[in-house]
Image (cartoon, rainbow, N blue to C red; front, top):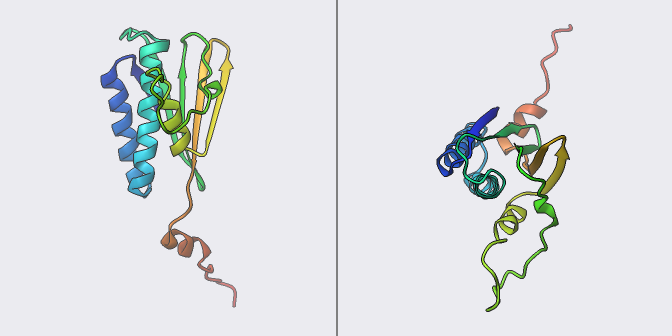
Length: 151
């Protein structure tokens, strides 16, 4: 599913709610949904605030998909080139001289398994991947022997 969102905080939250509904319909555990929603909110907020400067006339895209073993969120925008994967890994304990900001990418790293950035033409494309496993019931259904009609 692909969403076209305007560069506003409200639209970011609309994207988060859509992701949550879709992930629940796919049977993902609530803990996984929480992490994915937080990752989308952080990345979407960065796009809105930094890349698109809260210009509600501008839009960005969010692609959400679920495959057999992964849940993927892909965000793309036409803002200035910005690779969040180059942000340094920070100490989980804040120091007295820490500057605000820069913590969002740490949360995204915590709740996803892979983060890929590419500059494609004039777009930033950020791909977040969370590996998911099948539930026990899904595994049983997939491994159930097929009935043979040959006699």
